[in-house]
Amino acid sequence: PPPKVVQAFNEIMGIPKLRSAIRFELIPFLCRVHDNIVANLTDQSNPGEPHKFMLGGGKCQSRKTPLKLCMFIMGRLLGVSTLLLTTGTSGRDDLFFKFTDMLRGCDLPSPFEYFEPSEEFCYRKKVETDTLTSLLKLPAGQERQAPLVLRHGTLGTERRKDWAVEQLLQGVCLVANNSCQAMLTARQLLETAKTRGASRMISRRRHPFQFLLIMDEADDFYRTEAGTSENDDGAIKMEKEMKRLRALGPLIKFDVSATLFAIYLTLVKINRAV
Image (cartoon, rainbow, N blue to C red; front, side):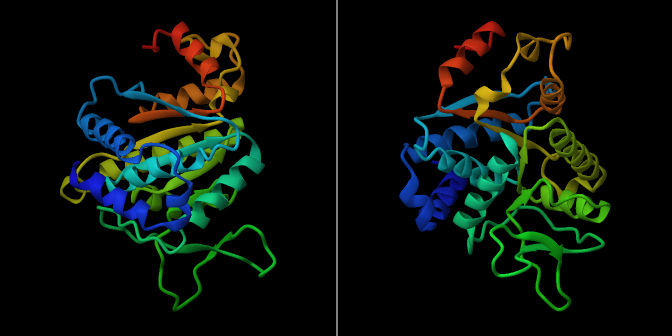
């Protein structure tokens, strides 16, 4: 396997909670993700569409989270960020908690130089009884710890958004719910990251900013036929915003669901099925 696949495998095997939850062939999966990313980083012949569709699934509660997490880890090591969309704010918070819990104490270095924003933030609990961490200003004198996961809903101010863009340029995972407003905010952050990355010296970045798009509970994103057509007539707002996200050209669009057949039928309609 390529060196980055070996590195990703070793990192994953070094995370006990993740290692014990894997129920799929890890090395072939990592190789496929790696090859799709590397092959498409320089292939921008059709930047308005995802370069690769991937499907992942299993029964409900069959530990599909490791699929998403392993894809993120592979992307992180290659300097590619991940946008993870799921259903509802409770689903968003649940995935954020699972990702941060599994990755706690894990060191996944970014291949890119870090540019310090005007203000640093970190995720921590306001009080010990909190279930979820909040995004708070980094205390004076405390060393920065590179975040691996961001949560939509904590990035409301301009300084937080500016900070989030710098993290995206390092290759983090942004978890957002599938409301129109959340997807709009995510798209704006990705667009800013693309612009900021392109404005910096080429010698400091080996490729333009790119991202992976993972759709959790993906069957919920396919609601009308207009949602998969080029015409917006009849599409609901969420589907229109999804089209705008796809227009940014994620390197991989990974649909994860317990009901993959419904997604397959949708792909048949748009001539994406094989």
